[in-house]
Image (cartoon, rainbow, N blue to C red):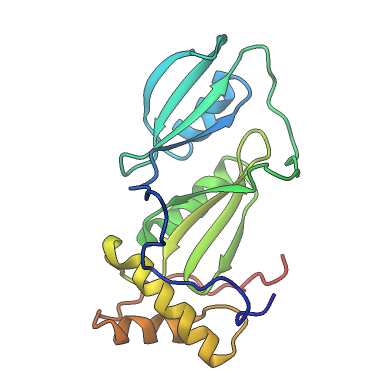
Length: 204
């Protein structure tokens, strides 16, 4: 589908019967509590803030983790389930979860993943920089750092402007020049974080 025939990209609210006000939580099927805590709490550093039965199925436990900004990741676990390997790919399945990390912690994060025996890839995605690894069940986990300083309440506006500049440029994906152009056009400072050089990972 060409950009000309696709739905318009804009930060303006769509004409809809209502609008969401943010992400409250995401819930995934987990394996057991021990392995889940080892990855999300002990490696990624997310506090376990609530534990209770899964109210739809009390034979399972419902773990609540604070991802760092008050938004919550929850995991259904059971001691009867062993951790699995390999991502399940089906329509409607979760492709990956992405969590924000601070740019100045990038090197420490890669070192921690190596020490934990976790493989990872690093990509420069044009609009952000990402480390990809897997949790204890093979679910792809992305740890993303913004390449530029962007106020949270302006992020959608910056990305939509970068999209317009990308289309005008005829580029396949948004790159540094589009992000910098968007920031300049919107009157925001262009402050780029010091992140390692990496491939875009196009086609991967």
